[in-house]
Length: 132
Image (tube, rainbow, N blue to C red; front, side, top):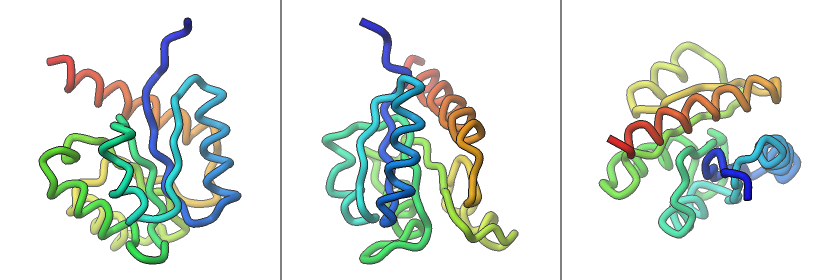
């Protein structure tokens, strides 16, 4: 059985983007679960136990900023690596993300190879932290 590179929870309200990210990561050997928005992410995160969460910023019910803030505030999820994937690439958005504690930022449209590289790095970092 081949080793799973890591577990990723892909959160995006756009089904096409969600599937695009999920397929790219699955093909690389990641175990992927998906959520349709921030609230769905928070409802499922304990069951999924992801190493990395990819979060869209603009979503209904609970946006990526609020979701990231809640994940960071909860002791059981504060260690999970968070990658924002968004069309909003202004410097203010990046600063806001850093302030919340977001680990990486990828702007849409993104290069799937870059997505995979960043998720791989974050997974490595997540696993290194959990091993120590």
